[in-house]
Length: 203
Image (cartoon, rainbow, N blue to C red; front, side, top):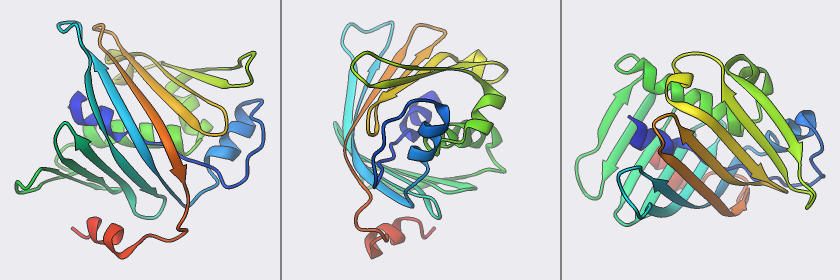
């Protein structure tokens, strides 16, 4: 579950930028856009390997539809998440569909992480101890320490950092593994989903 769970993480850009100085301004900035698209680079550091496992691709996030996460390298993986369904497809293989009824724990984790990127501080405070800070270079950082199960049984801390956008996400697991995701080329244009994007959510 951890493998695809880490792939649920994506990024929001903003149409109007104002300096983030506290949790309230961070929430306002991250919750502005209806649709966000961008590129990602994910590096997973496992205790048993010297070199990180790296993957890259593109994502589309829609408040009304859900998340489209398209890994392109080292191999194609297409992940689509809605409110109550998840579809995963490797290359040209037959897609696998999971529902919230079949795997409620997986959807619990995914909804928690989506609340991170929506800037839903009320939901975050229920699950995490929040530590917000602004660095000398003007960039902000938000460390989320899980307060209760099941999150505190998996993660030690989750750290987001950025300036105009969330530029980096770091997940540190209790067993020593870490996952770093870098986000670039974020945009909210076009303002509406394309027909191809809408088709991805039709399942």
